[in-house]
Image (cartoon, rainbow, N blue to C red; front, top):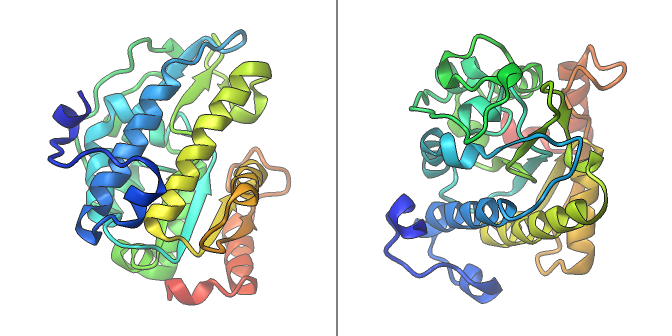
Length: 269
């Protein structure tokens, strides 16, 4: 099934030895395989109330996501920004982390077919690139890097944007349920799977600096690399661009200052 989807002609990567020996030309292919393996594993989880709907953008929005990876994830990366999970008007619609519609269509020049999730929440309809809503988090973070970098290639030369968890969970009325809000065995299993994938992605891309976008992503990256950190990867923190975060009206200015303070700004100028 996986081979058919990605048209792979190489065996799947298993363990660090396979990842370490991965050819540069096959980085995007291996990355997609890691992501889809994670997505398939997450389908086996059973979520209890209040989770009513689970969206898997790597199924129904795989086409734009594949273009994103094949275009921008072909080399090792100095910096990887890690978000938490898909937002309803961003990655849930476009398949791309923080994938606000205009940023993806107008800046990345990606506009691919998006289908529907297996069970769709009426309050969180998936219309893909026809979506009229704008994700403020994506608008802010990609707007920042557009201002700094000019063209996407200047951002992706040294960096990449990744979501720790590739699925979105919602209550019956459409309210978001984040991975941090899931309790008990389901959260343990979800984090176990996503932790493993994050570690493998860091090794594959030879990431030197992980920037957790929000406290949850930072915490998971710290936990992952506390167990094993063969590349001596550092973990840094960036305030999440969500308007739900208190006192967050000037996020772009705050984030740019933070990147400067962390001595990361030179990667994007």
